[in-house]
Length: 164
Image: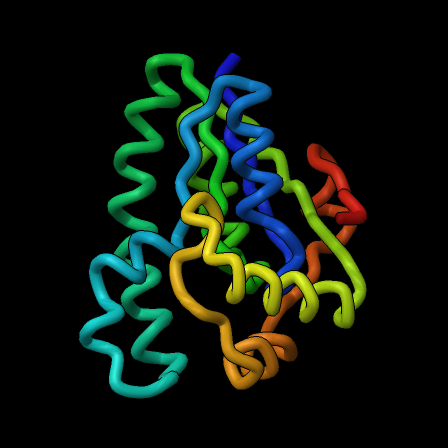
C-alpha cells in the first residue's frame, strides 16, 4: 500500500534530517521544499516578503504533487518535507492524497525553541549538503516562529508526534 507522509514542525526542529532517515527506512522518495526554492527562486528574492515567497512555494507544491501522484499510482511511497507551516497547506496535500485513495500520515516534530535555535546555528555553520540549502538567519527564524500552526488531534489521527 502506497504511503504519503507529511512531515511538519517549526523551524529548526529537524524535519529534513527526520525525512532523510524515514525515506531510507521505508523506501520512499523524499521531496524537500528548501532546495526547490533555493534553486528556482533565491536569486530573484530581494527581501523577505512572505506573500512573494508563499506564492512560489505554492507553485512548487503543484509540481511536486504531480510527481508524487505518479509515484503513488505505481504503489511507491513519498515523504513530504515541504515546511507545511499552516494547517491549510497540510489539509491540501491530505485531500490530494485521499482523492487518489491514499490515507496521509502527518508526522509532527516538536522541540523547544532554544534547542531549535541551536540546531539552526549548527546547520548554518556546518553546511551539511544533505540538510543545508541556505542560511536561516535569526530574523528568518523569528519571522517564521509565530506563523507555524501545530497540528491538532484530527490531523494526527493517522500520524504521530515525534519529540525531536
